[in-house]
Amino acid sequence: MSKNFDLIVIGAGPGGYIAAIRAAQLGFNVACIDEWQNGQGGPALGGTCTNVGCIPSKALLQSSENYEQAGRHFGEHGIRVGSLKIDVPTMIGRKDAVVKQNNDGILYLFKKNKVSFFHGRGSFVRAVDGGYEVRVAGKDEELLTGRQVVVATGSSPRALPGAPFDEEKILSNTGALAMQAVPRRLGLIGSGVIGLEMGSVWRRLGAEVTVLEALPTFLGAVDAQIANAAKKAFDKQGLKVELGVKVGEVKVGKKGVSVAWTDAKGGAQKLEVDQLIVSIGRVPNTEGLNAEAVGLKLGERGDVIVDDECRTNLPGVWAVGDVVRGPMLAHKAEEEGVAVAERIAGQHGHVDFNLVPWVIYTSPEIAWVGQTEQQLKAAGVAYKAGTFPFSANGRARALGDTTGLVKFLADATTDEILGVHIVGPLASELIAEACVAMAFRASSEDIARICHAHPSLGESMKEAALAVDKRTLNF
Ligand code: FAD
Ligand code: NAI
Image (cartoon, rainbow, N blue to C red; front, side, top):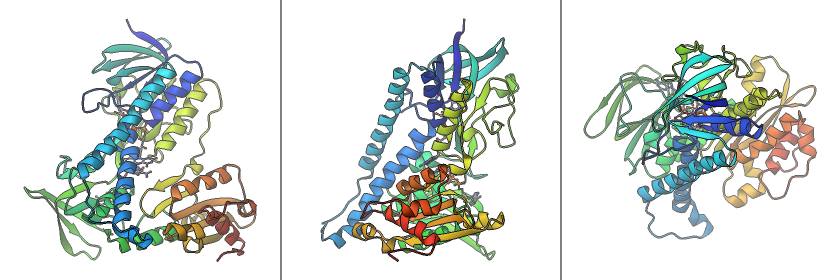
């Protein structure tokens, strides 16, 4: 006998667990299946984000930033530190504890919202009258029937051909977040988001870091002015990024990894490192879903094909998050999860894909929302730009972190804000103001007229908005 639910969610990452909670809030009887195991074989809810993504990476970024501050910058404040030592196992232990708090938090939220959780792999069995049968295999062995199904199975790291992850010498994000010692020489393939965040963590802790990137442009999707400012800051820190690289043979030896590569001019090069992190993008998780049993349509990348509203080709089957098109971001997955639950309830769930912010949590942080200057030019949109450097902001000076700038792009005729780009301290927090403003279709004049607390980094947002009209007050 199968257990009946209004909704079965497969996957308890940010897309799945949020969809399950929102659907339960709306009065549905919801099951959520997830197969992630902690070290003891128990459930570890929260998916990639909680276990080997957003949360642990930010924990290590904070620890390593504290170490760098103590080693390089406390002296400027007159704080003398004797001998400084990094205890990596303790740092990793703290990260694990932070992860566990989040795992347990989601389990608590499931109980609070009466979501039935099943620990194991979920796969489609067949379509039945008015729904779908889904098997749970693993710790829990069950047959469930759901009137509706949300696929939220996320993504996994893409390996370099011929260089499979062993998580000892060739690491994915999983291994990169669990290293028990600082390697002397660390190599990274791919200077995308993971490459820069993980490269920063281990560089701050003392590793000699080299990043090999295939594209000739640094952070090509980022506004070029912001990407250039970030590159300058990373160069100064000693984070070595080689652009326009063609990676060749990767050999694992007893002592480390050797990577043959060709530079932009075609010259043969070799990188010898103790460990290599491969961060060249991620692939959607649809293996094991048994999609063919119900005829669920997949794309070439193995992604679940959906429309703008996360509907698949099957009635009553939806898909959200990394397993579908669009940016692989936790907050995008969450927004889709909420919208789908609301659509199932007959409401008008909505996600504005133009207003999904991006943040790279390096130091300086990089954050943006909306259009870049390159995109506006390519689309032939007439725009005005205003920038303000943190070097002219009182709070940034007091913090001792004046790297970077805020940039506003506004429509030349209507002054509506079209994009906001930040590189600098706490860009991750500052960008929220831009998201709110753009969601309300504010003009740069609106931001320029709003009273911002002094002294605050937020004043740089106001000043950059004033700069659109060429009337900054402090620069
Ligand atoms: P996932 O989080 O991948 O969750 C999917 C879940 O489904 C997993 O638990 C998986 O085990 C489970 N599953 C898969 N198949 C099955 C099955 N058949 N049966 C049962 N369970 C199954 N994004 C940000 O927005 N901010 C960040 O700072 C950030 N940092 C990141 C850092 C790193 C190192 C990485 C790797 C990613 C980071 N991301 C970040 C991206 C973010 O983690 C993902 O976009 C997000 O986790 C996607 O959520 P999801 O719910 O779609 O999938
Ligand atoms: P990515 O797509 O951000 O970057 C991959 C990089 O690798 C690209 O610059 C690409 O040109 C390069 N590349 C691809 N193949 C290559 C090759 N053979 N040789 C050399 N370079 C190559 O992917 P990444 O860093 O793996 O992260 C995956 C995703 O996880 C991100 O796109 C993002 O969606 C998410 N993420 C988000 C974070 C955040 O929001 N702060 C943090 C970390 C990850």
